[in-house]
Every structure is written in C-alpha cells, then in structure tokens.
Length: 417
Image 1: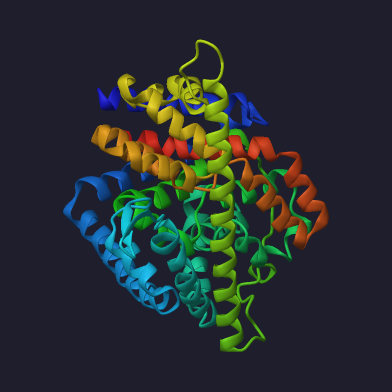
Image 2: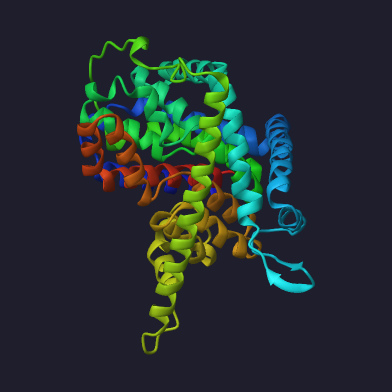
C-alpha cells in the first residue's frame, strides 16, 4: 500500500508542478533528467532508512553534532549559568523545571536550540576562512552539474544552498546575479528556499530525529532540480566561467575578523528566530481564539488549516486518520516558519504513526514559507537591486515550488514505511 500511495503522491506532486509550469511542453522533454534525479532520491532514502551502512553514517553525523552541541553548552553555561544547567537537564522545549524552589515554566528552546547556532556559525567561519567549505561546495557542484542537466552556476548554487543557507548563499553569486535571466534567478532562489543553513542543522538535531534531518537535506538537494525541471524549465546555451563565482568571499580579511563576523551573524540568527517565534506563536494563539469565538464553532484556526491541507497529506501517503493533524503542521510551516511547526509537531508526535512522523519531519526541514520571500528578495536586492525586484515579483510561485520540493521529499520517505 505504501508503494501505491507513494506512486500516487509522486504523480500528484508532478501534476501540481506542471499546472504552474512556465513551459509545459518543454517540461515533458526533461523526463530523463527527472527520472534520474527521482531514482537518486529513492536510492538515498533507501540507503539511509533501510541499510546498516546508511544508519551508521547518520550515527556518525549525529554523534559529531552532539559533541559540537556539548561545546556550545559550555559557552552557554558561562553566560547563562544555572539557567543553562536547568535547560539541559529538562527534556524538551517548554518543559516545567524548578527554579529557586518555585515551579516555573522555562522555555528551554532558547538555550538548547538557539544558543548553539552561535557556536556552529563560528565553526562555519573557520571552515570558510580555511577554504575547506568552498572546496566542498565546488566539488559537490561539479558532481551535480554532471547529473542534473543544469548549468554549472545552478549546480554550484544547489550545493552552496545546502550548506550556507538562504541569505549567505547569494554573496558568492554577487558577480553573476546581474547576468541571470528571470528563469535562472527563479532556480537560484528556489534552491535557497528549499535548503536549510548548516548553522541550524544542530538546532534541528535537538528537536527531530537526526536521521530525518539528514535525509531531508539530501533529498531536497535533488528534489529542487526535479521540481524546477517541471515548473521552470529552460534551455539556454550558456558559457559559464568558474571565475564569475566568488568562492573566497573572505579574501582580504584576517582570521579573527572572519571568526568575529560569523559569530555576530550567528547571534543575529538567534535573535531573528526568537523574535519570529514570539510573534508568530502569539498571532496563531490569537487567531485560534478568534475562531473559537464564532458561535457554534469548536474549531481553531489551525484545525481549519489542517482540513484544507488534509487531502494533500492523504494523497502523498499519510494515513487518512492522521492527515488532518499532518495537514495542520504543513500549513503552519507554510504561513509561519519551520521552527513554529516543529514545536507544534513535538507536542503531537507521540500520537502519530512512525510513517507519519517520518514524513512530517522531512517536510518541515526547509525554509519554504511566506516569510522567506522577504528574506531572499532582500538578500538579493542588497547585492543587485533589479534582481531583488524580480525575486519579489515571483515570490508566491517561489514558495509554491519550494513547498512542492518538501512534498516530494515526504512522499519519497513514505515509500519505505
């Protein structure tokens, strides 16, 4: 049954992409590339979920990040002292702990999830300065160029997005942005929105099963090319020069200048995520209560969103009995962000089947939400004004395409349960 629903889910996802395609006839001509990329997604999903070797690799990554998070906690202990100690002893974000003899509710999300982002950002800065990270990105980009049917810049950007995140990735492309057609610019922006930043991978590891985080990163890497081949197909004869891409954006800076910049950037991310959580969770709470004020209604705003997305959740393979809950989480991520949805998911995960937990988990691992439109458009606009304006114009289609990448990833994972 999982295989049948998986096939239905893939066809359904392809249909949703095709109806929004900018060139439906050309999309059909990309079928070879699409099948190769789809096969790679199935292969890696099987490798990580059903083989000892794949589970071992995931274990290595999980252990490595756990050690890094341990070092991050040491830094947090120095600044926050007993508050950090209590947060690491309590289990999940939001758990009640004892403080000065009084029962208080301490939201440990800030200490366990956000504070480590600063340390991971510092590690990324070191890897960037030593040229290790740019080298890794370039190698992955060359490999993707051979298998995706996309030009080198799009292939490079796919790898860079997977590691750098939706804002930082465009810095290395500042020289080529003015030369990008609108279609190519859509691909670059969609790649950024379908990824997550390496700096917050550790944060996701503390909230979700690490295997699903890693699987989502890998499947999204290939999935964005699948969706772009359908929703945004193009054929251009392009002579790409590697020199157009700035693979050493830290050139001319000292080691400690780079390190300081990345640490400050990590702090900014922490503040932005915390502010967005406060705002979005408060607004959702307000909307939920407003809907409950409607005479005869016992449905919250999120309940209604769940029913709207329920058919989509079912068609990609989530059991009907759990489709409303899954649909609500999918919708919450779309209109707010991945962190808000994950916090909601944590509270209901134990009541869901293993299959639904896996599919929802991988769906939540990306930046595909309405708020990302402004972040990406603003990042591009800061580097090239006209390109930023073009990104803003296709913003809704950008969220649509990036969300379909998450839908496809969840569908692929559902095959193996």
